[in-house]
Image (cartoon, rainbow, N blue to C red):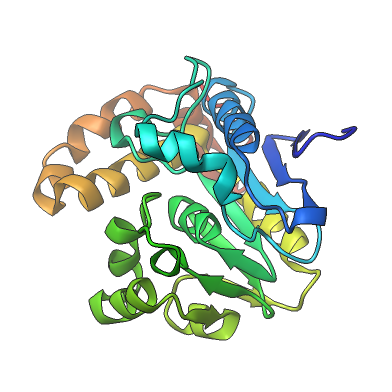
Length: 262
């Protein structure tokens, strides 16, 4: 691990991606963003990996962007330094997103970029001490990592606009009440609970999980009709897969299936 500001580790079929700048409350600098993008690319390409787990070292998930380090990038309007082996962890390009699910474990302060990482993930586990805030309007800018599009889809228009317009904090219990996080645990337990969920996802049929994610994303971006119209076509390659045969055989034999992702 050394002094890496983003830690990557494989645990079975799960890729652990950890923010590791606790002395600065994991404030995100461009190098961390690129390391995360590289990790998301690896998660997407590596057939042995079936799920990602995004977490942070220390008492806080992230204080947000280390803004002075991002000024020139924002002025240019270009992320820069992105290579073909990287995928944007915020998934702003819907045609080039990681095709595998990501579970996120968060705690303490989780501001700006952290909220948008939350919204870009698929299942979220939070410690009770979670503090969410979109502070951009207090800095003379606005959220550009997906909150203006995704937040109202998650918690409703009025709740989202209050959050985005004021920069007010949202507590962990409030985020849970609104459905922004799926589980609320005591501080210190968020990583292990998120890992349990990620491992359960990784145990399921990989092709089925990825097809479920793709279909749900299609519905969110292009609408119900577009997603519904292709369901029968999308299941055809899965029916011809080894995993489909294994699932049927396990059902007949009343045992747990052992999926290969083929």
